[in-house]
Each structure stands twice: as structure tokens, then as C-alpha cells.
Length: 559
Ligand SMILES: [Fe+2]
Image 1 (cartoon, rainbow, N blue to C red):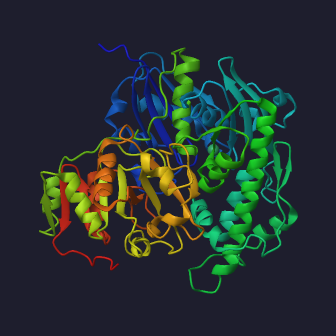
Image 2: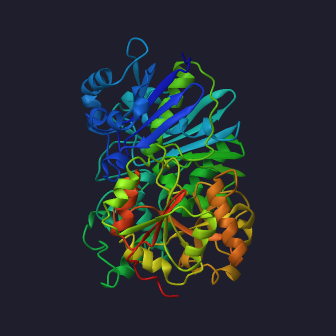
Image 3: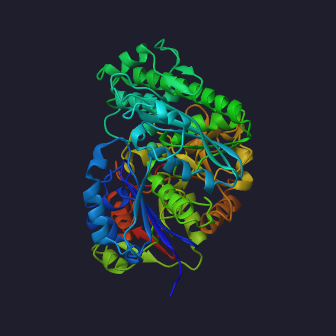
């Protein structure tokens, strides 16, 4: 019988997620949205009954401990119902043991002990975390904190001597007067776009605007605390003047100017926070988590302009990664098991599941052809070089929001029109939005202004001026790209694909975007992959060792 000890981490807030971690092996972590097909789906009662336990066989194994984190929402009021569900659905090795941890502490554990560094400063910045009365960490300021005020940023020094919380910014929760950097960007996003999770749209829109055109002031930064000037609050209160409708309606320029101003303010304030934390700690490495750590343009500036020599941002710095933080906290702090994990990739979700695939393809009514080529890599390279758009469904799914080659759509980065074509005919999204490159690690510095691996797609960097015309599909309007470097160690199949493409074309770069249709979460199952392939204008679906083509092939984007 296995003596593996299992801890389950549960994130009950936005981007609801779970993580099952063993004392000697990483078992699984997945966001709820991948199961329910609703983007950014929040944790709710019955998640285990309806989704997690039904779909994840690993949850039949007995767990020793559950660690859960809530945020500032009302879900904590359902705690008894949640626990009843856990006791009913899960098997425990002994008496059911369920503990809570506060939100920023869960972000912290998803970052620092999984980084490759020993001594570091950590910054957690998001929209809002736990109220002070529910903090489960030691912080000297807690005694004077009003119990209902919410953490919006937290600053730590972590290392062999343990974790020290240096400071937090708290906010009274008055939505008319938001405070903190996460709330600033959240309000900026809500002013421009309807619906949750549109921060990436703001970041993509910003380079089209003039950050000075609207005359908006910088954020007020006092040490480690960020305050939003009245001029910005007036903009946020105007819910019509800056609403982005569609490109070409006449509102584009004004919206882009606002996005540019907001992005600039965000970056400048973030750099000031990093400078404060560096002064306070004197260490060389910064770990950064919380939803704001998905802002790859600002992250690129942290890398280049902050006083830190190393910047580590995990692939899932957002709330979806806090389930992992919970599980790790449970293992290390509650059970006393030494940590043996590191973020080496984000492929923490379920593996590919091909059961029923043949029937699924047959049910396509003869629409598909299925091949098992003797040289899969060469065949995929030929498809890409011919201008076709190829979906790749391969291995365990990514936990976080970035498709890193297991649930990806690939194309030729040299193609001058393929970005617009994918945005219009595959992703069904705004035409201004950039698409990202994957690049061989050894070729990265010749194409991009970057001097280190970036395997999690967390940093934007300049495309070198002499390369911009070579890879136009992945070069944004401001000459930048949010790149992912790929080494053989990161992903052997993706690496061999890039190598073969480079051998044939001289360019070790491909376009990579997430495998999903319009406003959908990334596909999780083979059935979803086939359905997305069928209902969009992609040309091929690669599910190693198979290549699936449409007998009635869509138009190939003209060069
Ligand atoms: Fe968060």
C-alpha cells in the first residue's frame, strides 16, 4: 500500500480551482472553468459533487487534509455547506481535517517555495484578498487593522529563515474609492470592456494609444501603497464615454488613449513598488504573484528596469494558482513534509484522453480524415509552412491562462496576414489583439531583446528591429512580443517542431495562441478539441500520433 500522503487545495473564489498534491508526487491541478466551460468560473457550492469529483478520478484517493482559501466575496458564509460537501464526496484517511488560509498567503505559497531561488522578496498584488479578520498569517500590522478592511497588496521577505510579512496595503472596501494597483487596473478594464477577465484586451489595446492625450495624472504611490487620484475615479464613474464597442466605430482612438494612459500609470507605479521592496529587503530576487502579475508588458519592465536581478513569476500567478498554494501550505506547514516541488512547467492538468475519439471522428459524418504519419513533426511543419493553422492537443493541460504548447493553436509567424485571419476566423475576437510567439531558447536573443529563458510567457520584450519584418504575425504594433522560450527540457515535441521548422525556414519561431474558440476557456478534452476544430476555420488538428484534417478544407489565408 502506498504511503503517499495527499493534500487537496481548493480555491473558492474567482478562477475557482483545485490542486491534489502528494508528499512525493504532483498529481493534478485544474481550474473549474475547464470543466464547466464558463470562463473565470467562481467557486460555488456543489463544485465537487457536480464537477471535480465526477471528472477527476484522482479524487477517489483518500486525502489527509483539505486546505481552502476564500477571498473577500461572500462564499465564506457558505463554509458549513462546503465542508459538508467535502465530507460527503471525498474520502479522508482519518477524521476529516479542513483548514482555511487567507488569500494573499495562498498566492505567496504558490510562488516563493516553488521558485528556483533560496532568498527572495515577494510581492502579491491583486484586486482584493481576504479581510483582516480572516488573516491566517503573522503580520505586525494586524493588531491595528480594521477587521473588515481588505488586503490589496502584500510584501514579504522569504528564505531559509522562513516567511516574514513586511507590509500590506489594506482598503476599506468602498467601491466608490478603490485603492491599490489591482483595483486600478480592474476598474480601468471594466471601464473599457464588459465582462470579466478582459485585462489582456486593455494591455493589447494600449500600444495603439497616446498615454498623454487625455491628460490623466500618475497614480499616487506612498512607499508600498498605491492610491487612485480623483481624475481617474471620474473616468471610472463614466461608464459610457470609454466603452469599447468594436474597431472602426470611431471610439477606438479614445479607448486606446485611455488604455495607454492606464497601462503607463500601472507600469510606473509597479516599478515604484518593486523599488520600495528592494530597498526594504536588499535581496536580488523578486517573486511576484496575484492577478496583476499577468501583465506581461509591466513584467518586462520589471525585468529590465527594476533593481532586482532576477524576477520569478509562476505560470499561474492569478487566483487559479492559489489552490496549488493551499495544497503546498498544507503539505509543508500543516503536515511538516519537506517541499520537493518547483515550477518547471504548467502542465498540471489532466492528461489527454482519447477514449471514444474514433467514434467522435466517425460521427463527423465523413468530414474528417485521420492520418498517423510516419514522421509527425515533418508533416506538421509542412502544414505550417503552407500557411495552414494547426491546433495542437498534446499531453497534460496547462493550469494557467497561457497555452504553452499542450492546448495551443500554431501558425507560421512569418505570414503577414495570419494574425488577422486567426483573430477573425478562429478566435472571433478583436482584430487589434496581438498573438504571441514561441521561440527556440537558443534563438530567443537573436529575435528578441531578452537574455534569459521565459518558459511561462510572462514577459513582453522588444522584437529586434531587423527581425520585425521576418515575424510580422507575432510583432505587436509597438514592436514587442510576449514570447515563450522552448528548450528540449521544457517540451520535447514542441522543441522538435521548432527545430524542424527552423531547419526548413531558417526561423525558429512560431505563432502560438490558446486552443479555444470565441470567448471560451481553453479546450480540456479530446471531444472539446475536435468540436473547436470543427466549428472554427482551422485546417488541421494534431493529437499525437494523429493528424486530423477536414475533407472540405477552409480557405488557406493568402500571403
Ligand atoms: Fe488574488
